[in-house]
Image (cartoon, rainbow, N blue to C red):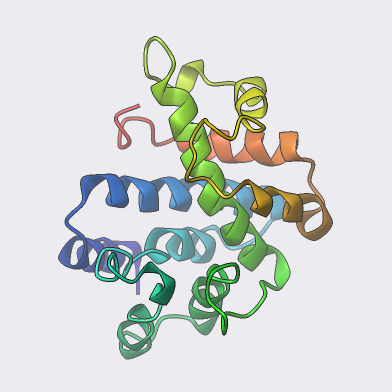
Amino acid sequence: MDRSAALTLITSWTQSPNLIKHMLAVEAAMRSLARHFGEDEELWGLTGLIHDLDYEKLKDTPEKHPSLVFAELEKQAVDSRIIQAIRSHAWHWQADAPEPVGKMEWSLFTCDELTGLIIACALVQPDRKLASVTVETVLKKLPKKDFAKGVDRERFNYIEPNLGLTISEFVGLCLTGLRSISADLSL
């Protein structure tokens, strides 16, 4: 599957523009992280892009996400590393989801939540732009549990031991990725 096929699949499975923007944001963050680690940017980007493919279809039973996507991805002969990373990104809410292993899986597991926090930080800026968000902005909002309440902050505890990055470095890399597609995110 290439990016064009992935986008076609996403738009056929997903109606919510915000969910599509979330998947684009995670793709951009994953690409930035892949560049940093000297990994395959296309593989990592595609993983981020399709990680929530079945989220909307399972909105009434979110604990089952991501379970519908695997048959489709296998039918399309998607790289097994992508499928495994998508499986492991459900580690905290699905009893049978495997713990992430390796940099790509841990990156998806942690940046999935961070993109939401970064976007929330942009939305409270006077100009509502990612260009106005700094690493410090995100770090100041991070401990405020009443800000971006849906963000699972516990995931950020896994960044340093599994990726060898400080939270500041990780935020900076993800923020760079999101800024690169700010027009697509309308931010």
